[in-house]
Length: 253
Image 1: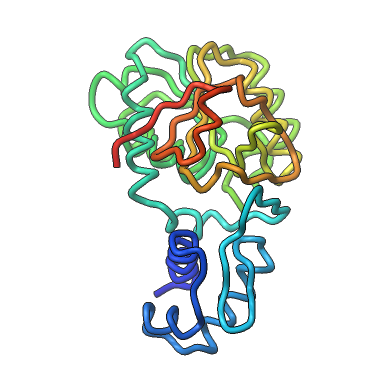
Image 2: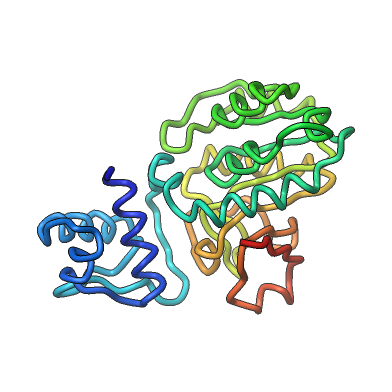
């Protein structure tokens, strides 16, 4: 099992149970306790969990993190939930839409859900390399923004991407996010990536943020949109306060 896959399982179990001991995680994953401790140390440094003596606890309240997990790790987390969110989002696309798709693991699930007609008749613009590849191999017309490729998210960012966006106006757009906060809105750790998201946000007639439930009450350094600027598509909303301020679409998982 890859380190990213192992840590994704650890994170999900700690979030579900609130806390787990090193011994419990060792038994669950059939790995040594020393390996568990190394994983917990790495995850604690990323702000994903709280490492305590003998185990780890889930983060409580609004989690603030400045680091971003690699895209490879993100792809292993909440796969079923992301697939359901992607399917729900794909159902909103009409054949005559001009669609923007942001980079990210959940928008990757959206790209995979766009199969057959009439979705392939729409025209797509993206700053995500994997999204572009999936759409192209699915028979879609797809345009890719210019700019610098960011390794952590495989997103195209920078002034080239901003300049590329200037010529576009989208009927519908789908965005990933690292965090959703009731007051601070949608956030991401990287300034350049936030600038591309913010600009693309402003160019969409209809805007959707795709986020599994773990993104709620999570804050990263840079806000790229206010909560009311988009409709959120998620798998299962546990914090019902958000329905007071933003429209929520829940996908069946």
